[in-house]
Length: 155
Length: 127
Image 1 (cartoon, rainbow over the protein chains, first blue to last red):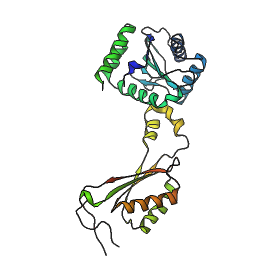
Image 2 (tube, rainbow over the protein chains, first blue to last red; image 1 turned 90 degrees about the vertical axis):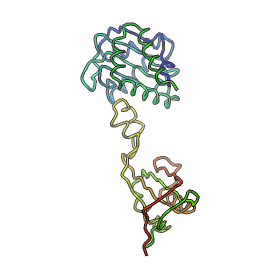
Image 3 (cartoon, chains in turn yellow, green; image 1 turned 90 degrees about the horizontal axis):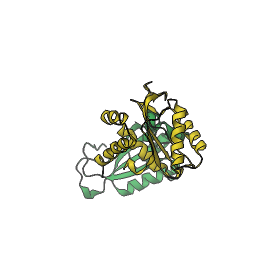
Image 4 (cartoon, rainbow over the protein chains, first blue to last red; image 1 turned 30 degrees about the vertical axis):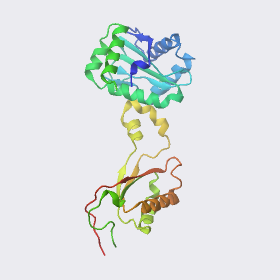
């Protein structure tokens, strides 16, 4: 599976300047709306926040992977954001989040959604990758790093 | 009581099967094991087990969203394994299981499958 198949190129931010969880999610949902990937952004944001109520997606080591399936999503999409100042995601390790993988999909593609979530979950287990992606200075650099990981696991 | 398959060795072509039955409805275990005795299955191994979904949803935070999918499901199950002498015994076991639990096509009952056995050792014959 290639994560880059789902990344919305215009939905990659290397310098997101908000640090509140809901604001971070709101800004990333806006990026998806501007990229034409979703319908009602309010409903998608609600769906993401509902998922956060089950358990935070701030999984530690400065990474968050908010995700949901929602009728407002046209097709499986990933948005990426680096937050240099760190956001409070109520993370499991109580540390700020510096990089967000936002994964959304339509209900009809739940199986693909789960596989993609699993791929991201495995990817962020690698400390080298985490360090690299958190330090990426531009959107292009972020995309190159992710594409490089896709190439390593091709096949 | 005679335990099948008796002493030793088996070849690929003699039809022995390993039956694996993951039973989600644990309340049926006693009736199933009694039924197995009735149809001549007198040996089995029962393992306390848990579904993968349960572990993902409750032990791995990123998959906590699966808890809604599992709502109402059973936290644990029993895995029953038994070496059977032939396909006919397996079919009888399948009929018994469905007689006790209902159709395996219905969700939440369990899953049943069989594997061919190449070799089996350690089985005893007793009078």
